[in-house]
Length: 139
Image 1 (tube, rainbow, N blue to C red):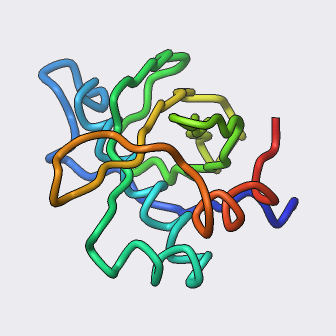
Image 2 (cartoon, rainbow, N blue to C red):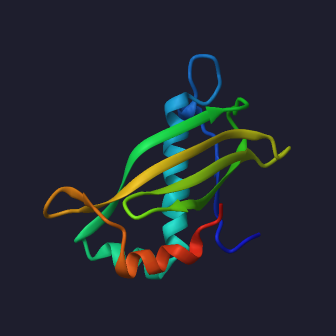
């Protein structure tokens, strides 16, 4: 697998389900967030830079496609990659596949900005953070 892609596996549990026995649509956002945390876990230099607390990446838009149902007991793999890096925002592409048959369960694109925590406003992605992110982009 390309080193610019991170993946994490998880099992669908009963509390993830809706009344029809499928994963509730809102739970996919949690699965995707787990994938984004794993992405930063796999890149300690980026994670440590963000841990300083002066800036934070903040999701400003999520587009998600639901492609196949997942049910209790399914093992899922969430794959994440940065697919675009601009001056003021970046995008991450994510996919969720069922491990048993590799079916595409869901795909999403998340747009995020860099937030100056003290000023509570978006700032350009430049300098050290841009240098850390640029080699990770996989369109």
